[in-house]
Amino acid sequence: MSRISEEIENLTVELVKVPSVNGTEGEGNIGNKILSYLKEIDYFKEHEEYAFRIPLKNDKLGRGNVFALIRGEKGQSNRTIILHGHMDTVAVDDYGSLKDYAFDPDILQKKLKEIELPEEVREDLDSGDWMFGRGASDMKSGDAVHLVVLKELSKRVKDISGNILFMSNPVEENEHNGIREALDTLEKLKEKYSLEYTLAINNDYICPMYKGDNTRYLYTGTVGKLLPAFYFVGKETHVGQCFEGINADVIASEVINEIDLNVDLCDEYNGEYTLPPSVLKFKDLKESYNVQTPFSSFAYFNYTVHSESPKQASEKLKKAAKRAFERVIKRNDDRYKKYCEMTNQKYEPLNFQAKVITYTQLYTLAKARFSGDLDKEIKSYEQRLVDNYVDIREISLRVVDKVFNIWGEKKPCIVMFFAPPYCPHNTLNVKNEKEKEIINKIKECAQQLKEKEGINEEFKVMQFFPSLSDSSYLKIDDDSEGIESLTSNFPGWDRVYGVPVQKIKDLNIPAINYGCYGKDAHKWTERVYKPYSFEVLPKLIMLTIEKFL
Image (cartoon, rainbow, N blue to C red; front, side, top):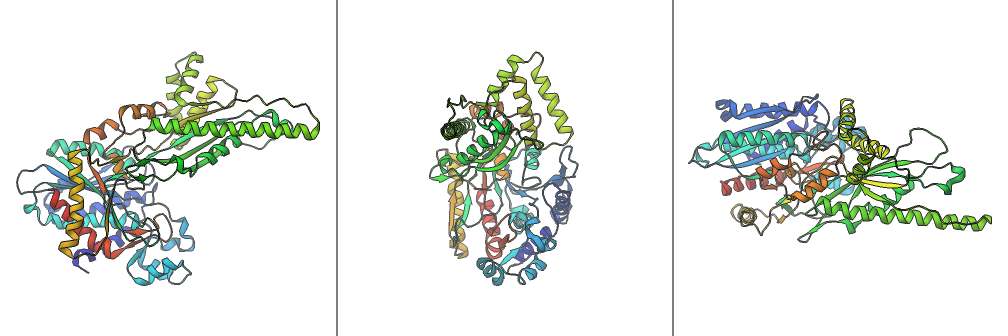
């Protein structure tokens, strides 16, 4: 093991030992830990102003973004490579009895040897080539690689033409607050030092696509994410007259069945497909028990895109919801008809219609009936919810519920809207000469690494990093029409939640992902493969920086 690899491994262990679960004070602690490592680097002892931490605005947990800038002293180039990643992890409840050891790779390794494990996990454990622990793969190892690479490059500053900017962000695992606020700092640094952001390299984890896959994937973009949400309104009735109403929960369950894991809703772009939508939340809005059927329900989905606009997604999902709604109405009618035959009652068709509208349509209908200032009413209501720390997705729901009640319609209906977060999609397009050149250089780096270093790795360049990534906020491919379709159907946009779309478009930073190679991110068997991650990856990053600067 080389000196650099050994330092990366040791630093990974140190970083994993700082619990930085998303939504806890640990995110602030890991930021301080990263900054302290930077401050010990000789270059930043000489240039203290180049390594700093910017606290998040109004953040009660003390979280912040960490930056470190190396300014090359060879020539006058403004080209700048960004090395970035996130510092938070998911929680550790999934570790069960091993929970107390989740943040200590050394002890966890010993404890794992004492229990029964799946065959593949046991093989990896016994090999000694894998480090286990929460964040070992996602993505403390990636942070460690960037930090040690930065340290090595700081020793060669007189030979560097251009700049390297390190950036580490909190709150990646849910709302992406860190990177969204970091855009302000990127703008200020760009203006202050005349930086030209040439490329951003994220180091979020990469993993096998299927069992036995050893390919090292290099991504030239990242998948986008929408959170389409549905407010379901039925017609309440006493269970003793159950056919006189229509159950909101049944409408919701049929829509979930229609959309969840529906591969016909995958978004294809140049031969790459997104994963299908997954339901993330479902609940009815009845607060107590009685024998009245539920009047309203709520659900939202993880919906990933490669090139599909929010407008296109909205149209597809509205059609899917209407198909499901119509099935519920027909099924209820068929069952009512059969019940009438069984009981010798007169049958008359149930008179329900499948109505599906967007939030924009609902707002327009409500505004026509509201005597006051509806915008002011909604804004005041949103602020009260924010002040009470209500989950921002719940705020979206409550706003829709309020506007629906202002409208006052009592007929069954589905209202479709968008809720936080919104992660823009982006990729490098071969039809753009500048972006095509970046793709070719990345391929050259991988090939050169194999030839010069004799490294026996199979690299493959892909268009979209399949997991959600902070790289979404460095470049955006959605057009203005698509953005308008999103924001107009997004309760609380720019008040409760927002993405600085124009700022992202202005920065327009080509964003790729290399990443440490690992398995089972967000699982208790999470682990990172040390030979590639600590030996090969640093060389690939340094070679890439050399080629681009």
